[in-house]
Amino acid sequence: MKFNKRKMITLAVTLLLAVIMCPVMAFAAEEVAEYTPKLYATFWALVPPMIAIALALITKEVYSSLFVGILVGGLFYSGFSFEGTILHIYNNGFVASLTSTGNVGILIFLVLLGTIVALMNKAGGSAAFGRWAGEHIKSKTGAQLATIALGVLIFIDDYFNCLTVGSVMQPVTDKHKISRAKFAYLIDATAAPICIIAPISSWAAAVSGCVNTDNGFTLFIQAIPYNFYALLTLIMMITMVVLKIEFGPMAKHEANAVNGDLFTTTARPYTDTTTVNKDAKGKVIDLLLPIISLIVCCIIGMIYTGGFFSGTNIITAFSNCSASVGLALGSFFGFLITVILYLIRKVLSFKDCMDCLAEGFKAMVPAILILVCAWTLNSMTSSLGAADFVATAMESSAAELEMLLPAIIFLVGCLLSFATGTSWGTFSILIPIVVAVFENSNYELMVIAISACMAGAVCGDHCSPISDTTIMASAGAQCDHVSHVNTQLPYVIVAAAVSFVAYIIAGFIQSAWIALPIAIAMMIGILMLLRFISKSSAQ
Image 1 (cartoon, rainbow, N blue to C red):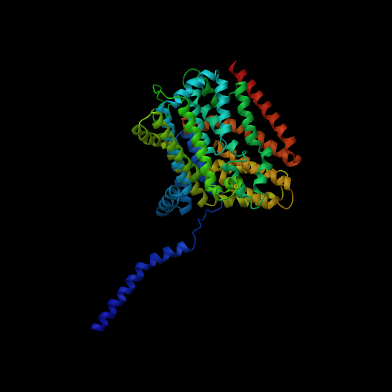
Image 2: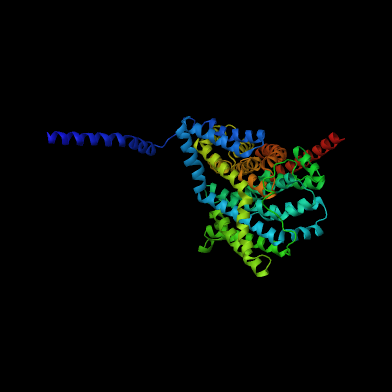
């Protein structure tokens, strides 16, 4: 009897363990067999970001719009399972975004840069520079050209460009009654569009890494004259500033700025977090030295991560660098140098310097929130196979539309980058396809098509509400994010339309020295026409 009872207990325990282990084994099996959603690599992969963008433009509210897009992406991925949606959004979305080394580096860079700006404001460096610039920059046109010039000079990285130009030039643009929306556009248009044509930049390194050959950097150099969107954006900015051309919603913002309202809208998410101490005894050097040290430290940080101090040359170091880690390291040492400078000059106490840490973090909270949501939405889009969908569509049409392919690639890059908010992700998808199609057939057309990949990626990134560069341009100008997107969009569309026509011409002519002058002439002609139309409607 005891034996039978023992056997029964053993059997019961075994069955109980089997019941307990079945779900665990099933879950493990699911992990081994990688889960693929039913909507993977279909058009539905692009629907979540499109919903988020549409809602942001309609409701003028970014946070809820991004979250709705994230939720739709989670539902599509899980097959509308409640538990699967929540776990995917949490684990593969927010947690993955906040544990990514690259993303954390960007967040650290943002906070430290915000802290340095707070230090410069409290020490009086920003106010001193504003007074100096007020004596030397006499007009609104001069203030805008100075902003463009500074943006062009800071070509190393678009993140660094946006926030540095914003902190340095804001007192000048405010004094000359330039609207925050126009200021944000000038910052944004001299960020990614400049970095994508700068040979020594994090962008050049990223593009070179997408080409699976030894001449990736050479291809980048050869593609610069064909990068119509970046070049035309620069020409467009300067022409509009010199000829005082404004159109679309930006014209209203600029008209209101002349009357003293720099914002037009009531939403002012950054204005209560950063204040300029006009009574401090700071000098211009209290702004210039921190900015110069920050630039130097960030460049050193980037080439350090690329192995420059281990013996590689500077070009290779930029090609292999981790921009986010390098910027985080550089901003940390830039912060230390700034604190030491102010302590030596006795313009701030140590306690004042440490108080600026909290102020800098608080100033960047809106940008950080939008960035985290944008990264999570990008994760949702990636998990649905947006990259595979676009790659398949491009490969299927490549053979039949050879001469028109640069223009088509430009459009695809614009739409993909606009929908996903990432230019690097866009050209990393498209460039390998282009190389595979043209590498052994038409080298010049391959160069044009690679440039079209880069131009389209920058164009979509330039105007996307969920682009990190667009978000940082809003933060740098302390402009409402939706206002920046709304006012910038018509300008981007004009440059994109001319670029599209230029790529059609380049596909047949295959000469930058013919296609580029035609594109510049078209751009200036369209701007003159818009100027005439705006003056006629005003009368």
